[in-house]
Length: 164
Image 1 (cartoon, one colour):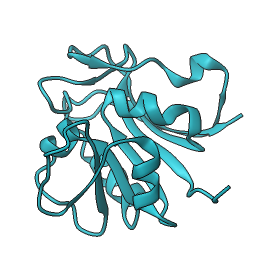
Image 2: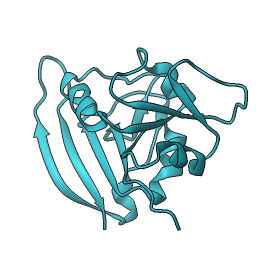
Image 3: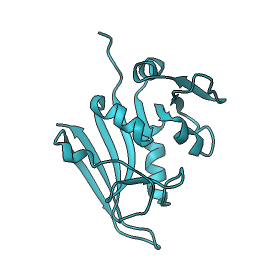
Image 4: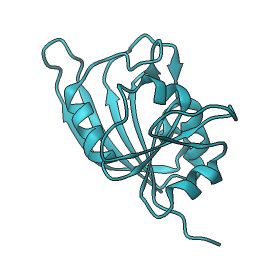
C-alpha cells in the first residue's frame, strides 16, 4: 500500500456549526486569514468547486486541487480530481490541506490526521454547517489559543485536534 501524505482539515466553524453563508465565510477575522495562509502555505489544498469559486483567485505558494463531479469543469491554475483517491494521487508527497466545503470535509474526515479548527465563539447565521468533530470521540485537543472579541468581531479559539 502506498504511503499517503499527512492530511489536515483546515476549517473555521461557529459554535452552532455554521461554516458558510451565500458561498462565503460569514465573518471576517484577519487573524484567521493569517493563520489559514500559514497553515496551507506549501501544501496541496484540496477543495470542492464552490470553495474554489469563493477564493479571490489562485492563492500563491499552494497547489489547488479541486474535487468535482463535473467531468467538463476546469479552471486556470487548478488541478481537477473526481474522487478522494485521485485528489490524494495528485497531491503526491505534498502535505494535504483540506479546506472545504462541508461535503469535502465529510469525505476526508475519516482519513484525516489532524484538524486545525478556528472556532468562532458566537452563534452565526448561515446556510452551510458541519457537526463538531469532537463529538465523535475520535479527536483530542492538543492546542487551544483563545482570542477575545475585538472591534465588533466575535471572540474565537484556534484549536488543534489530533486523531485520538
